[in-house]
Image (cartoon, rainbow, N blue to C red; front, side, top):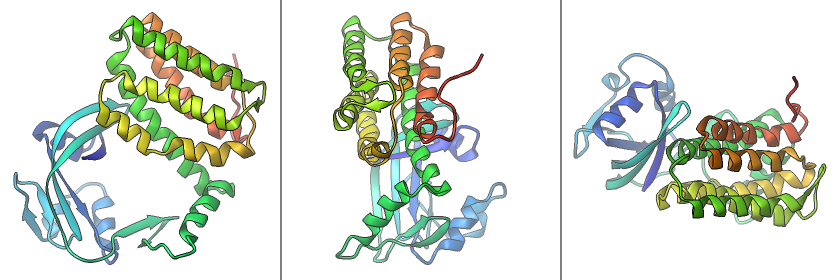
Length: 277
C-alpha cells in the first residue's frame, strides 16, 4: 500500500480522483533536473520526457529508478488536499540510489556504521533553526490533515460507545499537565498518542490508522517537548474536540484539530497560545 497526498486544485489530483489509478515514479540520484522539471507549475510536463505506459495507461518515466502502478482503494478530503490510499498492482525497479531532498538540496541517502545521519536528523529537529521548525510543522500538519478528514467523515456518525472511548482517552491526558509543565513527559506522549489514535480509529480504516501511526509523532514529541514547557491549551484542545463530537458540531471539531496542530510552534515561543478578544 502507498499513501499519496495531492492538492485538490491540481490537475493530477483531479485525474487520480476521476480515474481511481495512479503511478509513482521514484527518481535516481542523478535525476535532480527531472525532479525540478516536474515541480514546476503549468505546461505539459509529460510531453518533454520519454515515457512508457503503465498497465492502465498511467505515465511511467522511462528513466525512473523504480515505478509503482497503483489502484486507489479509498480517499479522504483533508483541507486543501486529497489523501489517496492505493494498492500497488505492479512494481519495477533497477539498481541504483534514490534521489533525496534535504535542507534545500538534492542528494543521495546513506547510512554509515556510526549512524551519522540519524544523529544529524536529531540535531536538525533540536537546533532551533527555521528549517527545523518547518520539518516539525510538516509532521503536525500531516497529522492534522488526516484528522480533519476523519472528523469530516465521522462527526455525527459515531456510536455512544465510541464517544465514551474518545472522552476517556481525552481525560487520561488531563492529569499529566500542570500549568506550564508536564508532570510526566513519557506518560503524556503515550496518553496523547492514544487519544489521537482513538480519534483516527473512528473512521474504521486500518490503512488510515496505519498511515497516522507511520508519521512517528510520539518519537518526534519525545525529542522536541523535553526542552519545552507545557500549556493548559493542550488539554483544552482535546476537550474542545471531544465536546464538538458530542454535540455533532463538525466545524468546531475541525477548528480544535487545526488549533492543536499549531501548539508545538506556540510552545517554542514563536506564537501566542491564547487567542485575544
